[in-house]
Length: 368
Image (tube, rainbow, N blue to C red; front, side):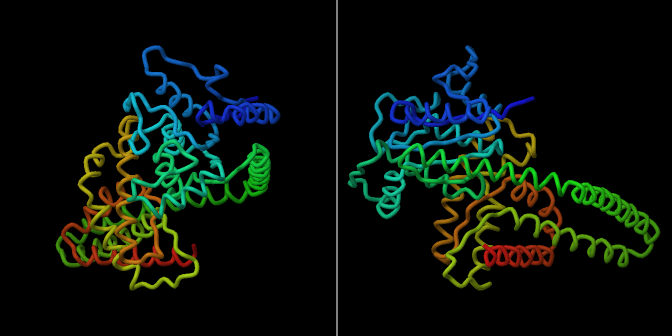
């Protein structure tokens, strides 16, 4: 019987006791802990050491990320000899998290309470390079936390002061996973029925498309009627993709605030022009879903920077709304590959897409 492999990601020297306790805790559950210092990572002599760590993360079923006061060693691409507090670079630990996030591996994040408290001081003093921080050795720790907290998924975050806090939270979380598994077993019969319905729906859609083509041939002598059928079909497709895309753009709002369509409308326009038509991301269209690991890393960094830029602009429009996630394949690619060809020469379809997207985003914000 296979065992879940749990990757423990953190800096080593300052969190050594936490790592040791985590190893013991994971073994108690009969899971396989993966920690570098215990020889659990297979190193490829033809690759830098950190690349082997990232490859190992991909082979794991869960990642536990511990963030303390040290940012850690840089990845091989950012080999900086002497690191000052405000020098920007990517640490191995932060890249282990991004690898797990990119591979959709569940991540449990624990931030030392003093570091988390100081993070909020950082947010108020981002532009002040004279602030002295007591609990961290690099400003990159705060930037990393900001990145984590801005993610729409894979961001189950807790704070801790002692290992017991981590242990208790993991017990509760893993108990919840087991409960949900048992619940899903009971519901599997309904899911099979739903799957059969989905298969039938795909057959119906295929039949509809075939029917439209046949009708088109028969109406070949009546161009207006044929174009009317195609236009109705295109409108249905636009509404379908607008809803699908809108549901995969993560937003959150200040729950005490009132959100209106007048506030959401300029936000949609901003996303439409600054994200869907972003030239920085356009080169990735040609790869579709076949994006290599190197390109994923590059793309993830660009998406992170773009999200921060969008939030900065969104807060100028409405400070109570924040964008938390951009699912590239389900938003940017679907827009450019499926929607854009339909609306490129039809302003009515373009407006229909924007209106529907606004309705979906507003609905999601009100329900958040």
